[in-house]
Amino acid sequence: MFKRICNSSLSILKDLRNILSPVSMAEGAISADTKRDHDQISNDGGDAASDAKKLKVSSECHKPNVKKKKVALLMMYSGVGYNGMQRNPGVRTIENDLLDALVQAQVVPQAHADDTKRMKFQRCARTDKGVSAAGQVVSLKMLLEEDAAARINEHLTPQIRVLGYKRVTQGFNAKLNCSGRTYMYVLPTFAFAPVDQVTSESYRITKDVMDEVSRLFQNYKGTRNFHNFTSGRKADDPSAKRFVKNIEIGTQFEVEGIEFCEVKVEGQSFMLHQIRKMIGLVIAVARGLTDQSVFSRAWEAEKVDIPRAPGLGLCLEKVHFEAYNNRHGSDGFHDPIEWEEYKEEIEKFKHEYIYSTIIRTEKDENSMMQWLNTLSLHVYDTRETDDTDSHNDNNIRSTQFGQALKAVSPETYVDVLKTFIPNRVVVSKSSPTDGATDSQPETRESTADSTQLQTEGAAHTKLNAETDGTLSAEVAPPAEAGAVRQ
View 1 (cartoon, rainbow, N blue to C red):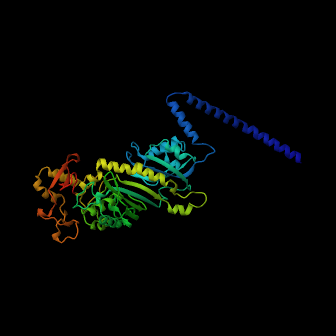
View 2: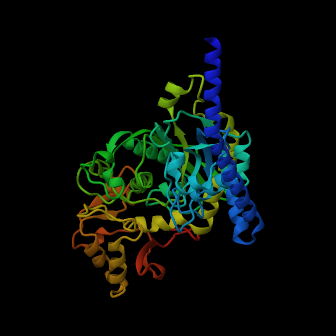
View 3: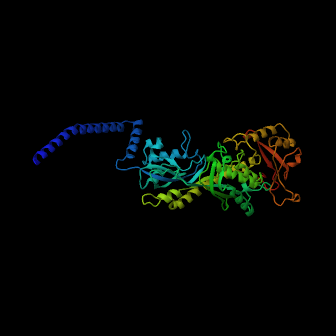
């Protein structure tokens, strides 16, 4: 019986071998054809050489024994010369350069760079044009190599650096798992100078002004309806409610004769232009160009036109993953998303590529000083429709204002002012005999009496031909050359 069973088993094995042999021969033929095709590509010139290179990169990224892993990649960059973080066809972006470097470093295939969904790519924050980052995080699936960061950096410009990566869960998403973001805004302290003081590079902020600015920033803490601090959001849109955990102004420092300070704001997430408008409104109130009631009005349903500070000084400093770290950071399989080991490198990069760029550009282009010239003409009145991106930079009323002044004499410009700003005229309380206890301006209802518009010194107007007639209001400096009194 046993002998018959053995003979039967041998017979079945022979039949299986006969069936499988043609399949093996066919696979061998396919492999031979593939080899011939590859040899043909290698022997061709011109575009064929480029195709062979891509084939090599693609094949190496698909190593059969190496599986791609989900990681959180830490990077930093200076946004100067780039049109933001997110990929945008036809323009230069940080993401485009990063994806190209990932392919060249052979940690992701070209097909995944072309279609980022295939490697689960996601950025933590979408920074705008010119905005820098000292702690950006992206999530993706890639091949794990010990020298991956160095290989990627070989194919990036010095103003973009990858520091390293951390293993994360398969479901990790850099945007959705981020529990908070910290931004910093670097600006010259003369931006906070009261309107009745000379505004120039020699200005040094006092402790009283610093304390007042710090107090004004506290208006943003907590959960607020920031629909007036962005574009395209209605007051009843739930997404307009944002939580600001902390906001503070740091110690001032001096570089090349200009005093600077740094404002840090930490929140859950921020909308388009939100931080720049938060900064802009505090500057306007601190200078005395509007009163503090604008804060309470901004939280209501009415549309209020909030001025937007220049984008030069804005930088994403750090992103936070507390909830993720508490759940997965100590499970023995994944690393907590923390970057303390790179702290020195981050600080060095900030000083070499972020701070230096902000300070040099401010010194060369005077972006803050030019913006302050237009801020004195800003109108905060209720708007019937939402603003556009260009509304704050080239206010339509200011343009009409400048055009109207071309047709009148300097002596009658006050009447033109009242035509375009009918309800509010800022008056500097320069005389101590009117009961004033400080130098803050007051806001009065405008009347036909032109004496309500008071200035200290010889006031004059100046049309800026480069901005289609937009008015730049100045007051002649009483003492210091080059100083501008706003």
